[in-house]
Length: 198
Image 1 (cartoon, rainbow, N blue to C red):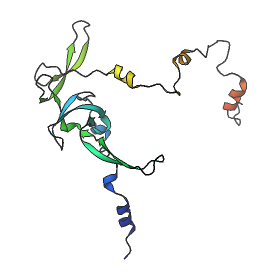
Image 2 (cartoon, rainbow, N blue to C red):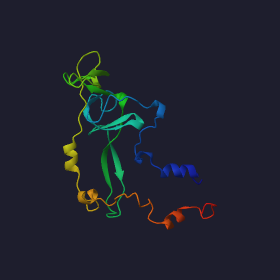
Image 3 (cartoon, rainbow, N blue to C red):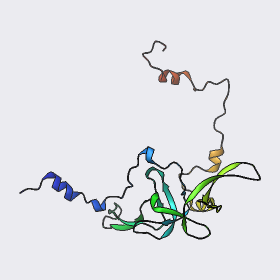
Image 4 (cartoon, helix red, strand yellow):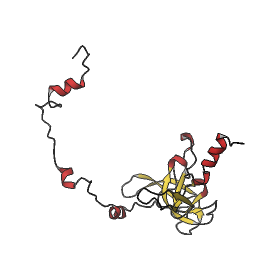
């Protein structure tokens, strides 16, 4: 008996080797006000990594999940490349964790806590800004600042980058006597040749 087409396709498609994608979340079900941001220290409260802490590397707002450094690792198979057809590798990648399985850490006790946003008036400037606090207390959970110096160290100039001198060079000087287009022929090309205004 010959196998059916569906059986052959099922054998051909190995679901274990497919890339792990986060589940689709409808736009109305996505979190509007995030309490977890990149760089936060969090505790994993559910799943195979339960009880471990880590730093948030990336926030995936479209799927209500985050990626944590060296946590929730999965094996990904990489096909042989054109440069070396004999080399196929297996690498470990960090997969997303749903935000409901995470808790922020108290900066003082290092315990998992709930957080709330609160408006605080700056005594110097008098401006109101929203800050995170441990729920029910006055302990602030400060947001981590972006490490701009680290980004500048990682950034390397390449041959295809425009030099700063070329970017600052003035190549166009507007003049009231010169029309926006160089000559009439370009305007004629843009017009419809079959129009009555041509």
